[in-house]
Image (tube, rainbow, N blue to C red):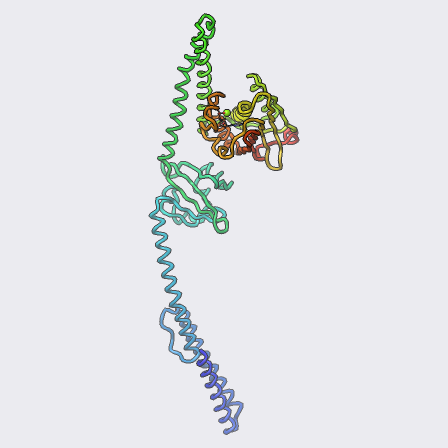
Length: 435
Ligand SMILES: Nc1ncnc2c1ncn2[C@@H]1O[C@H](COP(=O)(O)OP(=O)(O)O)[C@@H](O)[C@H]1O
Ligand SMILES: [Mg+2]
């Protein structure tokens, strides 16, 4: 490159010297110099014209013949174009490979911008959700997938858990939707057919609900006879009396188990839910404590509720969650222990908590407490008459109320079970008194 510029410099200097000499010789120095500059300008303009027309033809033909600097410029641009064309081809090939592999995917993949407008999707996603190219491109995904649950999931960005919905375009198909945010909050949506899993899960739920329901009738008959036997207990031999007592305890436990199983299956099927309403926390908590005390307890229960808050939800569900926590505190702490039931208002949440000074739980068991039938000590459960379903019920109820359960515990020192409700479900005293 250096030599090209050197050559050009020599050529121009020589031209200048020659025109200067001729100008001096013929006595027309300025005209000669002017002609030399004019020649230089015209030849450069001509090369520029050649370059322009070649570039306008998108450089498809080979570059025009030129020497010197212009020749080098043409060559450099030509080389650059060839390189670019090659990498474009490579990228196109890679892109079509990606497109081919994603269209072979059974899972649906959708890309939407940060506002949820559809940008791209593969064939499976199109089939699952009835998306049509190119009409649906650029449309908000919530306009195409018209499902209230999906609308809530997408607009409230509840992407931590996958969502299962019915396919809007295919009858009897259930889809699991999982969304990830990437880049500048753009959406990457995966859609999976989970019909088989969903039906199996449905079958399991139906089975548990039906079995529990069917067990109720024979148990009622058994309990009826046991009550009759109990009335004539004194005339029975001593060994029989003990048997009747035992049978009564066990049948009560069985009844509780069936009730809990039925409640859990009702909680699992969203369609059988109660209507949510505003409830006075004071009243709700006092009702729970009254019913627990009615059974007879040797514990001291402190209720600490400083404001007259209201909580939005299902009375029945909240009642059973709160009473499960209170009953646990009583069951798993020694007689005479203190139990504190508290309601606290924080900035953006309301917390219901039950603390006891009882047995406590080892840290390794805490994550498993809400599993069905999980008990820290199996023997302890049967002695206390527990079903192992209480905390599973609490978890489900809280799920329905956009709340979460936090457990802190120290073995031998007691436990705190707290339910954290979001501010949207809480009404402060002033707000509801104004109504
Ligand atoms: N307040 C508590 N203190 C100590 N352990 C508890 C407490 N609450 C629950 N647990 C433990 O968690 C297990 C599950 O509780 P839950 O689901 O209510 O079933 P259960 O019918 O056994 O009470 C209990 O068996 C017990 O081991
Ligand atoms: Mg319990």
